[in-house]
Image (tube, rainbow over all chains, first blue to last red; front, side):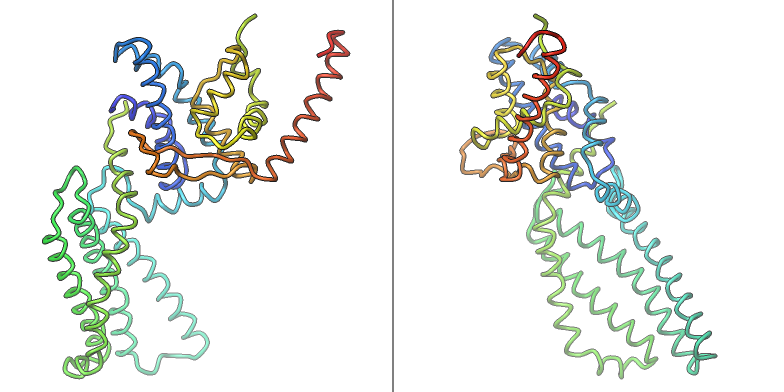
Length: 246
Length: 114
């Protein structure tokens, strides 16, 4: 019942709490609004009148938002702030979100590397093997950024193919293809990182095989399991976020 | 008599919710039904406002909650079931004493004992 969802979302959306916490609020308030609606529908026999009475019994959205906010602890406010920077935002596509996340992590990595190098230089003096250090830095910063973007995107594609939210069709075959792409990406990224550091591709092959093959085959399964567990909650949150509440 | 609602109820809602849960675990809608039943229809509560009170109680460890099992055979969105903890039972006993003390003092001043 979309009208009831909107009634709930008006109260919950402005609350500064983690997505998980807000989903719980939504589920509970929605279940309650449904019960009121069913009661009023049985009493009044008119859907529109039942919705209006439900809204009256439920209370003003602004008051409820204020009370819900007051019930949220400091940790939840911190989680809200962290999710604002690192989590998915309403209306954001998977590609845009993973791009923003990878850019943010690239920046944070860069700051960490600069600080670490500055400390090493201050304590030990000039770096002995500068080309190796530079290559390791590039591998860490650039390839990690690319990984976050590509693997993040594949995670969302796999999740949608596995669970079939309203905006995507369910297809296990497609999920398996994304899984394969995931494995290839992990392998390529590992190879690129090691080859950049050692600057010798055949030697890099020798170093990473066969352990990287095992990792590349296991990681998509792990990410698939994570999508299976976390996906329903993420999808529910996205469905609520798609509601027009104004 | 006017129904009791809004600001008059504020501050007592949490203790009243604990009292309803002392009778057995319940979801939010059932807690409200018990409150209305116990209040003989004289309580006028905006129903959404029950949940912030329940969240505060849960944060304080006075109640605990879990999602209703799907096996209940009920259609519609899932509900969360609340139950009182030992700490909640102790707090309820304190709340009752505080209330009796309050009624005694204020009743004495107003020359209208409870």
